[in-house]
Each structure stands twice: as C-alpha cells, then as structure tokens.
Length: 312
View 1 (tube, rainbow, N blue to C red):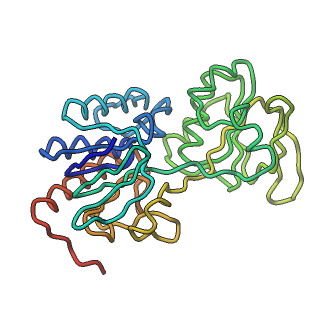
View 2 (tube, rainbow, N blue to C red):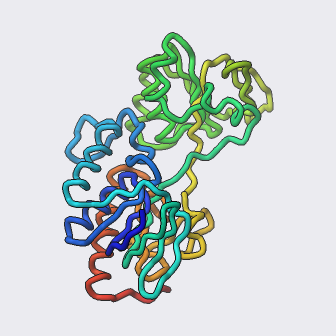
C-alpha cells in the first residue's frame, strides 16, 4: 500500500505506537509501518514493570494492544509492510516497501532492537525446537522440566521469573560475576527457590537430537566444561539496533544506534528516532513511550515551522 502522509512512523512497537498516536492527536495525517503485527518485542513479555498507571505491572500482550486501539481511535493508518529503504525526495522522505512507496514530510524511526545471538553450535539448528526468546510462549510447554536462561540483565531476569511459573527449575548462566539490571528483578530472582544462578559461566554449545537436551557450559575462570541437562534454552545476552536499512540516510554511532538530540532529531532533516534503536535509550517501556511522544511533538513542530537546528 502506497500513500502520502505528513508523518510516517517506521516500527510498530511501543515507541512507534506512542509516536503515531501522539502525532495523530496533534492533527497530523499519520501512518505506522509495523512490518507485521504491531507490538514489537514487548508483546510477548509476561510482566512489564515501571509503566505509570500499572502499579502491579502489566503484560505486554495487554499493553501493546491497548496502545494500538488508541492509535485506531486517533485515526492512525496501519501499514503492515516493512521499510526496505529510506531516501530523501525533494523536501520530503520516500519510504520503499514491498507494496509501493510511502511519502512523508517527517519520519520517525522506531524499529527497536533484535536479540544478540550466542553464535555457538546448535543455536541455529534448534531455533524453535528448544531455543527460544519467549518465555510466555514456550514456558507452559515445559511443565515439570528444566530450562536454561543465558544472560543476566533485565530481559534475562524477567524471562527467568516468567519461566519459574511453569517449569520445575530455571538455571541462569551469566558470564559476569553478578546479575546486572534492576535491583527489583534481582531481588525477585534471588528469592525464587526455582531459580539457580551460575555466574562466570558461558554456554559453548547447545546439544540435542530432535530438540534441545543439554548445554555445554564453560567456567570463565578455570576453563572447565560441564554439561547441563535442559529441555530449552532462552537467550538474552544483549540487543542490537534494527538500523541497517537507514544507515545511508542518518548517522549511526559505533554500535549502530541512531544518534539523536534531546528532541529525538537525527542528523537528517525531518527524520527522528525513538526507542531502543536510538543512542542513549533508557531501554525501558516507559522510556520508549516518552521517546515516541517527544519525537512526534518535535515532528509536529518541524512540519509547522520548517526549522531544523544545525548539527554539531
């Protein structure tokens, strides 16, 4: 589906949905290119903390549809195509998709991030057959079994806690000497009798026949390797920004994140970025929402005035 809009948001996660809703409520014709189903990675999260209005937390599969419904009510156009390229066209921007070009006066990049791979034998082979990144999807299938979570940050701890609701045991493998991330998650993990944390360890191989049966784990200090029996491996060792498709249009930092100022303006006139795809993101759901609202407000001001600050 091609078309022309005042604002086009690339990405249908929480940052993108918030940006689209804010833009439409400001009176701008707005489209969001979701690249598939709206919601992004958060739609599969069992429990999101730190979102104002939800003191007990909220499932991503509830929060993201709520945001989509608000976009619908505000008049946002949803396009399921993914962006295949971003090019300037006169004083506007041309977004290439499989269904045709979308033209917009302002563009907000909110494509989020993807999980970093371990790059070990067995990871690719057993994807979808025991290697997963969705505890809420696969946890109920593992009742009575052991699951391994690789990583020690917020996402890893959230998934370990979600898995503990279903499995007999969760073993967390972290290559550092302690869990990282929010203190609240760390306290919950340490207090959960089903979760065992093994630090200064790395997974070197994922083993199995028809599905995952075990992981080979190496001690960082001694080099000793052991096998841990498990029915599934959940990998959360970091995130990398989904920014390759705009590398020719905006400046990226050394890690591939879109560089922005405090108003979410990128190096390219009329292009903004929000959420974890941008440098200095808070990597929190509430932060993504704030980024989206800020980017949409700044885009509205740019379209009204044509003003764009000089880049350093």
